[in-house]
Image (cartoon, rainbow, N blue to C red; front, side, top):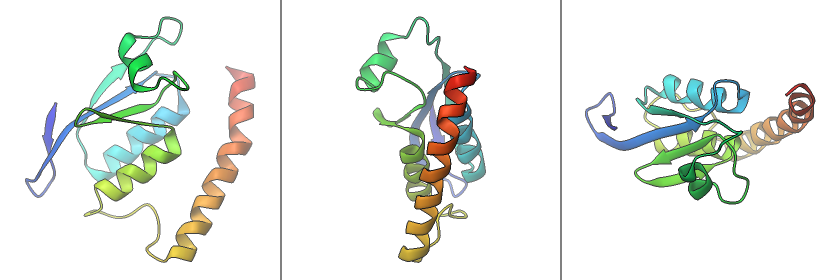
Length: 123
């Protein structure tokens, strides 16, 4: 799906490979919506992974995967930073100041590491 930014500039094809239950993929959905990025959702069955998911994320073979203009971006925190940097004309997720940005990345990683084991236990 080719989409345009609010200013009419073409953003290219944006697809999100996800499951309905992944909180990590849901973070990406929220980020794209906050940035005003239109995207196509491709739902994956993790018990029967598609050949595209395996091609786009051959290392971890999991969702979420953001496909932008044919290029896959994997791992939710990496995808969030990519979205923030690619569609930077709207409100930024991370501060401009390098120290503040590093601090925000630290806490995001810390929270991710604390929540991930709990989610794995529940799922």
